[in-house]
Image (cartoon, rainbow, N blue to C red; front, side, top):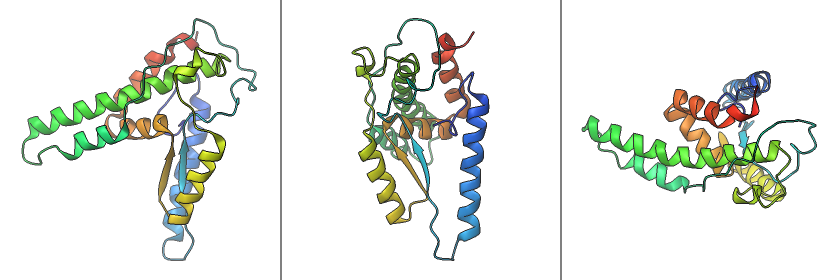
Length: 183
């Protein structure tokens, strides 16, 4: 998810992920019409133990993860917006962004706990992760279909939507949730 929105203390990591994203999109453009398919994948929280093995040390209490909301609700809220009523459209977009933010807030809470090495504890159990085999299957299906992009997990799907609907809001929300991790 590092390519979707900046995370304080992870600027270099995010920049490298953004470079991979743009490189992949460039490859897609360069190979159009050649029979070569290019798919960009945005994985969310995968149950691998990567942060526990990363030797990252952070401080502070565990962050409670908010319960994720269904991505379909956010899409429906945006798609139901009347095209001619700008006030109504703005209201629907705001409601959709709020629903997506709930998913992303849960993801960030889960991320904080995983970085703190609590990914296998009861505290971290409030945020779902995707099993590696399921993530692999999502990637395989996206490649088979020739999908342009694929997100894995509600956290990645939510951040993908929020960062496109309201990039500044996504940045500010992540910064606030991650503030306890940086000095």
